[in-house]
Length: 433
Ligand code: ZN
Image 1 (tube, rainbow, N blue to C red):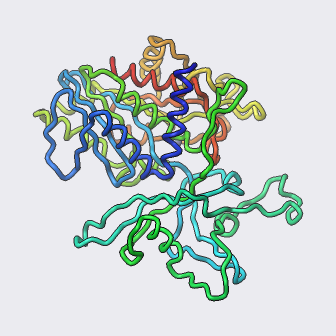
Image 2: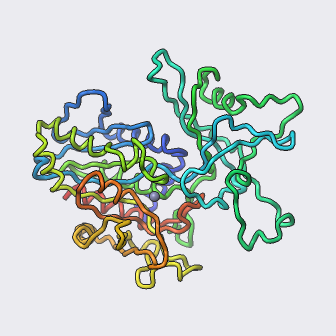
Image 3: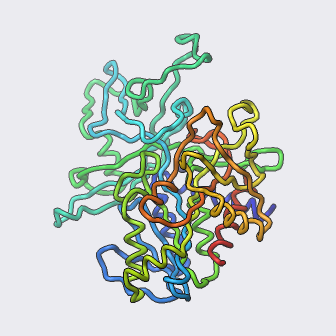
């Protein structure tokens, strides 16, 4: 349990240091740098070597790491783990300053992905993301990460006395009800560029040099272990930074084998993946093909390598909720800390099939890792994931898995200490086969 708890605390630090998908990508990059991986760029020529460790970043928000195997890719193929860096949140709109009743300064926001809106009320929120800064090259602005760190905004609830039906369920309007408050203003107040000035001061540059911003809200409350035996992990973004973290440690800790190991962390899963850094783009396929080319292989070799490859699409699953036991499937009820869930769907919202499930189950069995099955109730439409989307780009055998969690897309989700360590071990083993 000690090793498992240490790994869970390590995950908590990783998520606390990842207030946006740009920061998550940067955290992955830092770990890879510290473990001998070399950064490549899409614009340079790649000269890859067997057993070499590399990574490449797209848009500052997606990252693909790989370790070249010592076999031949046309025979030994690629072994891939896929996950995503983004999580549901609020994005700050351009010209965000709104003055309410000549007194409060609020920020105009829009919803990113599908957060449980009610969980964002009354939290100490901060702002993080990236800033595009003016340079001499019009086509290449400089990219700088920003994290204000301090809890500078909050979305207060309406008092129960002003809405007596609040506990019977409330409609939350994302344009009017969830705008965070930044400050109370005086009569002489100038709202223009108020937020940009705060950001400029934070990153130490002139506000006029800021050209554009991708800013998001996040919860500044730290994650923690919870439960009589500290068996639960309570923190936001378990979906899906926990899988990024497990995959990252898996590829770092595994020994180089014959196959080429790949960890693909896509952005924009929560909004449908259809961006250049999302799973619906050709990004991953291009990277795999460039690996093949750099190793002196031709197109035929590349296609052969795909037929010998396997993807684990890793994204969280829904645990049985003890207060809502009827919400899960009647015969498949994943429980926290009782093993990673294999996700199955007749309509192929998940890629798992009997052949790919058999592969993942064998991996887990060999390491004494428990597995469970997740399927949606037949009268409920579940979520989707990157699995089927990346399968549409890459015709590789694939399984969808994830750890059972509660409160998915809440500002704080609840997962299991044991499950997180278990899935990491399954990735490490997969990479070493
Ligand atoms: Zn997810």
